[in-house]
Length: 111
Image (tube, rainbow, N blue to C red; front, side):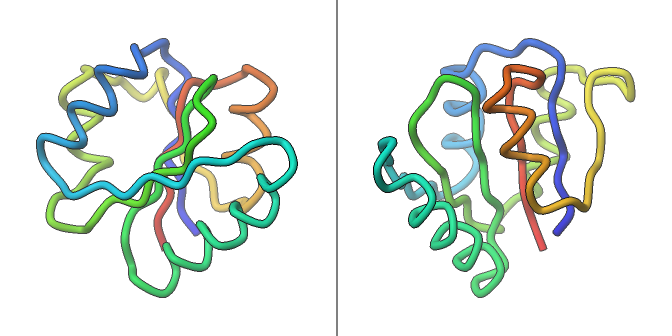
């Protein structure tokens, strides 16, 4: 999996609306008791359907984003992200760990 981890502060609502304006988005809402199960389902869906995934800080949802547009490119351009504002990772756990610990704002996942 390749993930764009956004470290620069971005407004979650604006990020989500930007994505929704350019792609179909399915929301998966979780809570503390079912997060792990739904995370596994989320990752499986990304892999099987070749869609993008979006996970943001302080939002108890996973988002599945169709591949109609390149979400990584769209977000990088829309929010004027430079190489210092994000990192690319191929670690399957890092996109979730850095969001949950507050070290990053959002992760865009793809296979």
